[in-house]
Length: 293
Length: 134
Ligand SMILES: Nc1ncnc2c1ncn2[C@@H]1O[C@H](COP(=O)(O)OP(=O)(O)OP(=O)(O)O)[C@@H](O)[C@H]1O
Ligand SMILES: [Mg+2]
View 1 (cartoon, chains in turn green, red):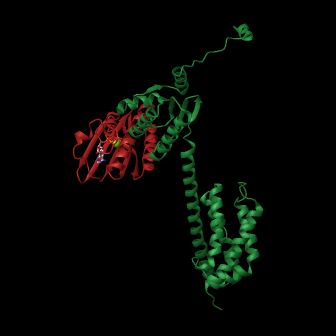
View 2 (cartoon, rainbow over the protein chains, first blue to last red):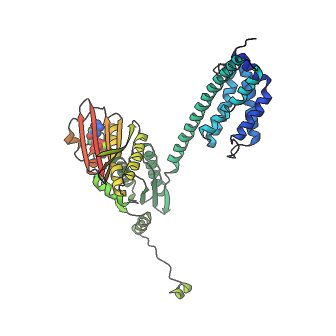
């Protein structure tokens, strides 16, 4: 009896579902799926069972074309698995191996079912490969998309996180800048600074650039604008944390900030305290300290 | 003089400018440049990459590791097919800008480099080559 590959595949997957599932889960475990500890055995078993069950149904009603509606729920399940793995930090290989390690149990089952009919085995394997490869591509696309979403969200979070304005003392603010000052972020930084100057009625704002790797003309221009705007709001700026190599480079660039600068944030803070009529003095040494001299 | 390693980076977004800086930093370290020289070539690269993006409408940089005898260096070639620069002397004048910048990028990049070549043809594009040696 001649059967086409799809029919053989449908029949085999339906009849041998339990055997295929056992072999698949065993393979997944042998391949180290549980080793990272990010997924538990029960969860793996459930995922595998549900994917295989849905595959059987999809094959039965939709044949091997994975773009049809028959595959909708399977595609959704695979997408969920892929998404959650992307978020948990699985590698692409870890993620795709889940599906691709289903090939061997299915191929084995096909050989068993078709016995010596080599043409029929080959046809079945061809159909199975086609289906699993298409689903694999789908899985990878979702994985990639999810990673990009994670990265996008992280960079938005970084943009917000890394622009805090810190109140050091009454009327004294510090803005520690960290990382690349691209235009989008610099806008947020400026807004935060000016708002904080208003809220705190600040007299002095210290802009610390210890964490800025490159000060080019664009960064310099942003700094100049921030300094000018702060001045309009009644606050003077001190720039701190200009490292020696940055200072030399700025001189060659021809950039002048025309603002007081101090090498460290601590020095800038000390100056700010003096400027606002305060002084920091060490307490008179107490008796035990005296004895140590 | 031998080129011992080459890398190309396209420049079409602000993020690309950041990537160019990072790649140039890696080459500068490989060439054995000190911290000051690294900072100089990275900053010059940042200026030229942004000009390529903002005025040249995007383009590409070729980053090369150079070896001449025992001397090592980094050479950067920025190319775009933008509008070109009509008056190179003017463009290299401090504080000259057509884009609301400080007008210090091009002249600054020249001062930050050991070698600087600028070719530009109106309607064809612009090529800037700089090098920094150890
Ligand atoms: N690749 C280029 N293509 C066309 N015009 C350019 C290019 N690079 C520079 N220019 C022109 O030369 C001018 C000066 O460039 P320069 O980098 O010195 O200053 P800027 O980019 O305007 O400001 P910044 O100080 O922020 O760099 C630019 O304003 C622009 O008109
Ligand atoms: Mg410029």
